[in-house]
Image 1 (cartoon, rainbow, N blue to C red):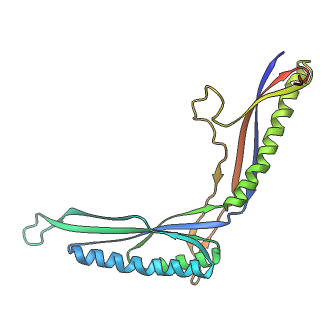
Image 2 (cartoon, helix red, strand yellow; image 1 turned 60 degrees about the vertical axis):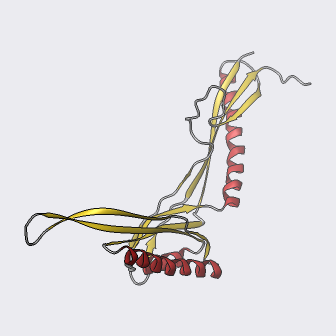
Image 3 (tube, rainbow, N blue to C red; image 1 turned 135 degrees about the vertical axis):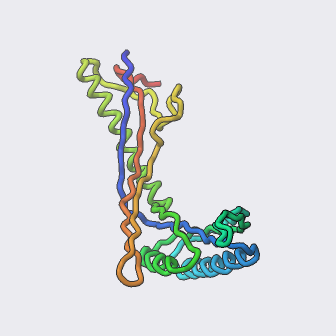
Length: 227
């Protein structure tokens, strides 16, 4: 018998269902207590807003687990001597992420917080729900596995080897001897652009998300041997 190794791929595309905004609040100054208080005050306001969005059902969850503070020296020009003088400064920051179901509410909230002093939006992440992602993966697995059958049989037919029978199937990265650096079992890609829009909203353009499956399989030619 002859062994034939093939690869199968499949992709499903779906509109983004969740939008997660990641931001941080940061202030710096020469007085430590003042800096910390400004960060805490602004951060508390944002957290209260995030909680309200979750309670209203517009957002799914919020998270704030990262707070940092440090001291650094800033060298500025001395107006009297013309030289440089060292000034001790303090900086504090706190992060927040909020996952939204309602993209219109997300858009409005982004427009509001962009005007808040000390707030910097880091990035937006577009995702699917776990239920949707798993359903798309299941569909793609069936198609990818079917593609391996078609490919293997095409090679066998071209070589006059007869029908093929499956020996093994591998998700990407799991084939023996693989260094683990291949294509992941599934990949999710999405992009977004946040640009100032008219009025009290930010224009969001989330792209569709691709869920991809890559499989490899081994087939042997010849009749299927039963138990």
